[in-house]
Image (cartoon, rainbow, N blue to C red; front, side, top):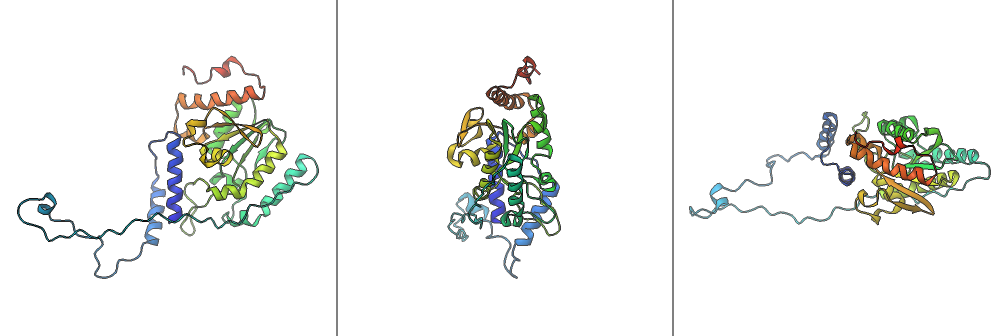
Length: 312
């Protein structure tokens, strides 16, 4: 339960950095959380009240002159900081690419990721480990954080609703998915506690240890593709590339150029942000970042493209 609350807190913080003020929760999600709480909640001993203490008499609470109350406040135990969540992950793997052309190297990398015992251990039955896809000679490398429900089923990044929106964004750049490379730092969907026999509901951002374990595989993809630009999609991906302590809110670094081991990085919002914030202002913010990417890789930009989401 501690790991679940930690993951939920991190996700809410991530949403807050992107400007989200309210979150909709489905009845299915609430039912799952209630069931998990009930399953872990110890039974109340016979004869023990369900509450910590009775409420004080109203007269004593108001400090009236009708006499002193015999009610004694309950002793509240001193709060201690929660213990850090232990990942239990081993040291990151060593990735050595074989000699040969890019397709040969990528296939070898796929085989290593697919057979990695830690990756396999962290996926649920019937799901798949996920590696990036796209043009191995791409100038642009779109980087997300981790696979979601649809991605772990298909074994391909960005195929769910956020991925479909990313495809439209790429189309707005006069490109297709096959013209770019798309990948996540993580090779598996970060797990959350589930009820036996039921699918995981919702996602959580990967921990620093999880991303650290998968980073050698991400670096290997970067080495194979050798893009001119990396586009970091969202706060978690940006932290994975630039360091967790490099910024507090995404707004501080969004739309500015950074570097990852010598490769220029443009940080922008995750497509899921647009799915939650259907405003021209939000769409324009991401599009302005992509215009900078297009200029950086010398893609032609029409007047229509420059005017996207303005005065709409």
